[in-house]
Length: 245
Image 1 (cartoon, rainbow, N blue to C red):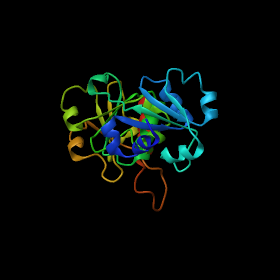
Image 2: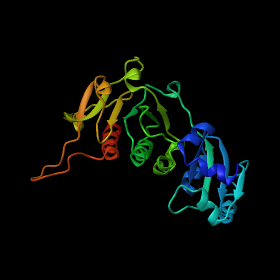
Image 3: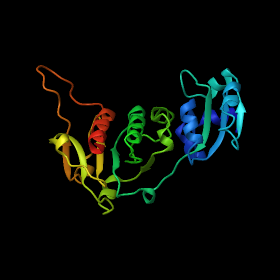
């Protein structure tokens, strides 16, 4: 694989055509190498290759200069290593509906999606279901924001209302709304689904119709004006904390 081909993977079109995506940075690349994902190639500075020779056994690797790395990097400030890997493609059959599931509805911001995947990983929730209009997991900005969690968390894209109507979900379907019972009063159990909507539109009406319990995150007690809403990834972190507590 030449550098021009690697650079093309910054575009969704070529990621879809090739089934490949880019991973950058030492932590994320090492998490990738320790995962079950297929690594196609690693491009790195000479010192990085020497330092991580053990992890690279059996993996095609190529030494590149700082300027060459800058040409293929999607980052403003390139790091010492970039890897190309096969896109993970888990399906609904890979999910355990007896365990907690994070469901994301219409999350378009790459940083938010990546942060939610990373936060789910922190709390031990290794399965996330996204609506088809969510930003793709292998978008370079999403991958970067996951900080390696993309290699551990199964992320499936599917029609959410259809899934919720399929009978596969074994627990409650919790959705975050401005109105609803206080989050701390919810009795979360294994098998529950936690739904987070987009910042701009919230949970879509079609998915909201399948929510069995509406919860809200109470604002602090204070006078005067306050923020209109929480960032979606922050809301997800609070809900995941409560669900796992």
